[in-house]
Image (tube, protein in one colour):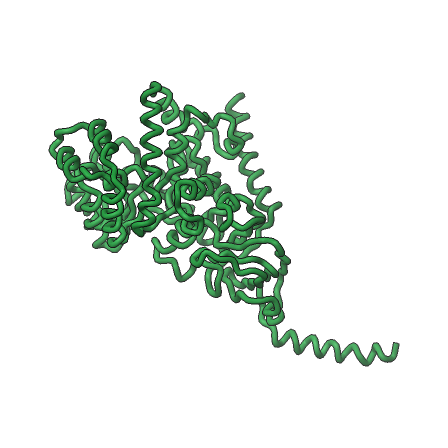
Length: 480
Ligand SMILES: [Zn+2]
């Protein structure tokens, strides 16, 4: 009794001394395997210290003794990698604002903590959400957005900035500068091809990167030389793989050949040596490809899987789901021959993946998920996209890189993202299994760290239930 009395103050003193030497931290993860995406390797048995939303230190067990942490989690058998970036999504549909907002927690629950919004018709909402998410007032992925995209007069897409000449182009770019958009998106439905090229150059001059489709009147290399930063959708790359691209492009420019005939001729003249030679020129310019295979795959193979009973549909609002109909209707009009052609054209494009990789063209993982794009699901779609790139020949770590390293690099964010290492922002995915062995393991989400906050499986499941609940309530109201 007497001894205890004497010892107590000494213990207290020792404890206080230790406490004085320790540094405060918010979260420490013990014995976790780190996925080093860049070097395609695992660092086992690591300790990760997180404070103020950033990684404070990564090292061997024992480093935790320097810290006094609020939260401490033993993570034996788990794998940690940077959380995912989807570099091509769409928020939009003027009457779907509320349902688009429900997608925000869905992305987070699926481990997608950053998205690149490639234009729609609700840019005012998207810019507001972007701000609220950055200020932690709203749960959702960090948003980079193009705002409204550039198009020609009477574009089929609602919400575009329609331009017919350089004066209008400059006014449009001024307005985008006022909106402080993160990059420029240009498509060619109704835009004059020469103005398309002028818009690329003008946007680059103003400091933006440019994402776009590829007008048929120019070769892919001409567009890349003009400064196109990303080519959206793998199908456009087919042109550069053709031995006859220059000739067919010239014919299209002079309107001497229709789209169908041009496509047939291109498909018949695909050649790996030509493809790799031209892809190398794209790579030298830093032009990246965003294959968006998930969406094309789904519409291509609607004859084999109509997706009517996908479990994920419970997370998508009824009005958003109704926008899926147009692609489904269009595909249902294809006869047997058209279906074969559809399959062939997807498979031919998909086989460009290893050639693009061999030529050094940077890949960006993007789904094209959002309204209109049937069954191309926001959130889980990115995991499918990664798996598809691997299936068609991209090495697993390159597929992961296309999301977690090349995504941040596109927006000059490499200092803050792209690896599990000191000083990076703590947006991290914790998986039950090693994704470097099987890409499907990205879907085995055990937990997520978002801006330094640990979200366990129960919290993630609750987020999902809340989304499903909102959808179910709206569907029930509609039925009444
Ligand atoms: Zn798109």
